[in-house]
Image (cartoon, rainbow, N blue to C red; front, side):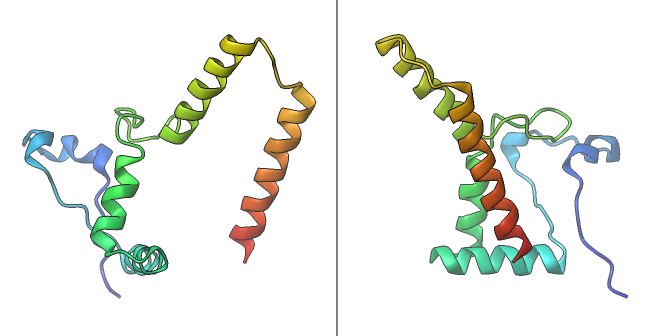
Length: 115
């Protein structure tokens, strides 16, 4: 049986990691994670390292100290855009419409995940 080479970033401090974050660090992926990263990168037409860095850039700043993403950066940006539009126009989206859009997006993600 192969040993997985995963690093729980939240546990690094407990393991005695003392280097500053600006110094950088390695993240080790298990075989399944590496395979999925490679497939996603190939589908996007970029190298796996570039794909991973772009994905991390999307959440840096949104990751709590515990290592759990509270809100993806795209959600925060969308909220800001919607708020600005509301302040400009005073027009709101009815709750039923917002929930219908949410339900449709959730259904699509669940269908894609099941494939």
